Amino acid sequence: MPMIQCISPVDGSVYAERPALSLEAAKEAVVHARKAQKAWAKRPLEERVQLVLKGVARLNEMSDVVVPELAWQMGRPVKYGGEYRGFNERSNYVASIAADALAPLVVEDSASFERRIEREAHGVVFVIAPWNYPYMTAINTIAPALMAGNAVVLKHASQTLLVGERLVQAFVEAGVPEDVFQNVFLDHETTSALIAAGSFNFINFTGSVEGGRSMERAAAGTFTGLGLELGGKDPGYVMEDADLDAAVDTLMDGATYNSGQCCCGIERIYVHESLFDSFVEKSVAWVSNYKLGNPLDPETSLGPMANKRFAKVVREQIADAVSKGAKALVDPKLFPADDGGAYLAPQILVDVDHSMAFMREETFGPAAGIMKVKNDEEAIALMNDSQYGLTASLWTKDPERAGRLGREIETGTVFMNRADYLDPALCWTGVKETGRGGSLSIIGFHNLTRPKSYHLKKVTA
Image (cartoon, rainbow, N blue to C red; front, top):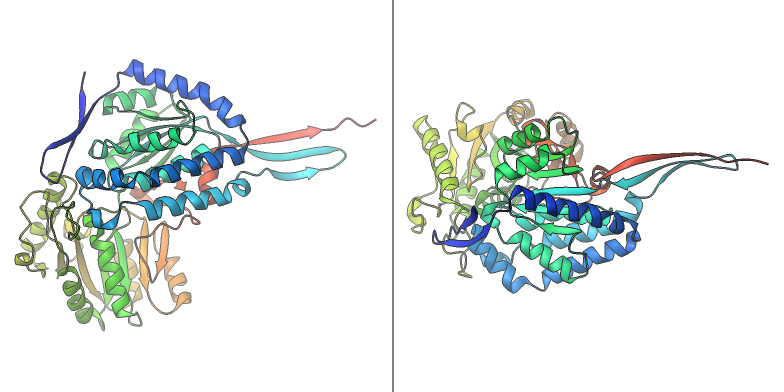
């Protein structure tokens, strides 16, 4: 029986392993989910919502286990307390809008006709969640999917092998039926075979662009709905009227928090020439204050990357850029814990351009490139010179200007004076190779249900 392993970035040990399900066993799990979903969907909406919130509350009670487990699995320092803030905010928000989001759209209710559009659960929703924010990315779909009456089958990345178990444990202990919410351990081959067999009614995948292509290939011809959140290379643009200190603080945090392993992390920054030198100087000082080390140490503010192969990609991109004329400004001597493996010092590069992979390809590490620009037109052209489009962060005191520029930027979300944040009231979506579909907000509920029309002609005496 093949085993799925989590290799801890803390010390390179095998932290956890689980046997992968056979295709037959996986199909049986889906059969149980499909059967249980019918009864779950018949429960009152408010009952489903409250059971999900009880599951969320139960997971909060497990923080003493969850937080160190995250550190061991993917390297986030215990100092930050896990993902509870965003996890709770998203869950509470979708609960608050569930009734309105799923309410029928009544076209006519007269003596002659009832005409309306109702939202009906898809059936079985398959969630394939990533390791970088394994609780928050998963809950984006799990909470509204369950509230809407779907059954959920969850598969996590091997790097965060235990997260699905914890989520299901919390929700089942809170009263969600076991077959309605299941965690599975699957290899890629079995996952693809399940999808190709049309096992699911909707699939949400968060991961790499190549992973998204694999999902689409597996689902080809099944007409299964797909939500895909894939790669990113999110830009920041600091205009001449920006609050410089606030921009440095937010953009550097957005570039390096979680060792830069954020879907919407800031990877490239364009700064108006009048602020460029000051921005760079302040940014280098900001980043140099990190303490890189063991994530289980409460003093550590920057942990290892989740896997040494991820850190290798970052180092290679930086080395390639430097060989082409870029300058690395952060002194590596400040970070003696950088071991050439998973532990990686943060870095800022200047004298970069878009001929370098560092400014084009997803880096997904604690490193950012900063370029000088003369005006908005140059900044827009550079921001759009990317195969990705998840978020863009604009720094100005002028909301009208930000809105005007935002309409020119090829992106899913436009921020002004903030970055690296997911607002659950807004649709989380991307363009180009970042993917398609959208989660959270009222639109997220609509993507996790299907419209069903009722045209009822009344018999009159």
